[in-house]
Amino acid sequence: MHAWLLPEAIEDLLPAEAAQVERLRRRLLDEFALYGYQLVVPPLLEFADALAAESADLNLRAFKLVDQLSGRTLALRADITPQVARIDAHLLNRKGVTRLCYCGSVLHTRPASLLASREPIQIGVELYGHAGLEADHEVIRLLARALTLAELPASRIDLGHVGLFRALVAGLALPQEVEECLFEALQAKDVPSLRELTLGLPEPVRSGLLALPELYGGLEVLAGAAARLPALPEITRALGDLLRLSSELADLPLSFDLADLRGYHYHSGIVFAAYCDDSPAAVALGGRYDGFGARFGRARPATGFSLDLRALARLVPPPTKPAGAILAPWTEDRAAQAEIERLRAAGEIVVTALPGHDGDWREAGCDRRLVHRDGHWIIEPLNIE
Image (cartoon, rainbow, N blue to C red; front, side, top):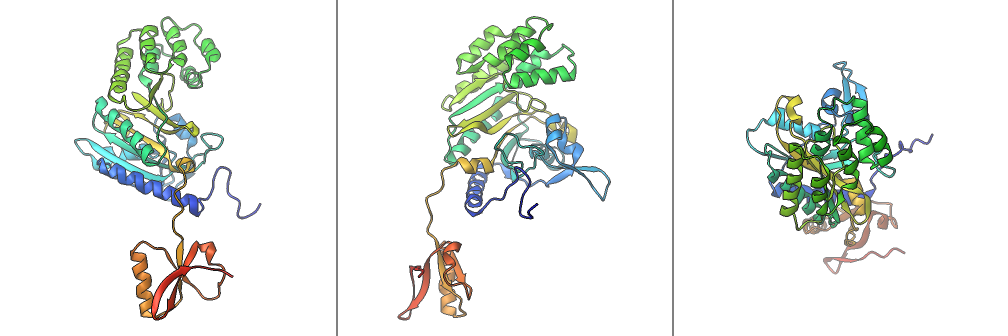
């Protein structure tokens, strides 16, 4: 095997793409800060039981190894959200609303989709301490703002509510493997499998589960759900929350998908997924996960979203080609050094020409050069013979 080969679905970021990722990272984190979201930087690995939490999905996605100091199992993070919940619950321990943001690499044992990286660069926000819909409103609107700043406005934002599924199966005492199969069939909108799995379930539970895959589209979905789902208090409340958000966020391209249960294992309420015209897959995911911090000693209302900067950078239009670098001579002349520093202070990229590399500087991005003529330092086009 060649020493330069990387594992499948693991790749380097070369200069142009790395620059695009970094531009997006700075732009989004700066915007999050304007809304009061404070940056945290959790570690790349933690004890496995802390990172996996109650989510079987996160547990399967995480690489694990044995800590040679403690003998305990460690995991490389597959999602930063549990780490931020730990910071809020155990380290900051604030009484009121806490807004946090983050950006860093995560590692997956398998890619999330055919073209996905196993090392996404996850960026996102989390809002803790407010149980009302105002928090969901804020993070959904901030997600839309983030995509607009990235020059990739959302073509649609699907809203759902995991409380609908939970209310339908509550009290049935289904074996965990059956509930998992129901969840997977709903997520895939696999109606034949869903019909088979629900045989023997009581009415109106069975009819409600079979209705969920068909309840997607515009605002009419909520009226259809109210007519087709049992009038349980939890279902009525969930549909009311979705209706209120649809009114408050009417300027956004909202739609509804009541069978979308991504993150079901730890989400507790409103969930959402943002799409853009150039991608069939969601570019951002989010939702409410109240009480998740209980495993860290403090249950808190929580909601947030995240997206993958690698995937986003590939979709965002490339920036207008910037001016290239200026090639400066290798010299100890103080006047030349002062001019170089002046140019850099003005935002120019200045590359010093190390000896013995004539003719190679366009590879470094140089398109101009600094030369001394008639007692003055001037910039002229870089012409390579």
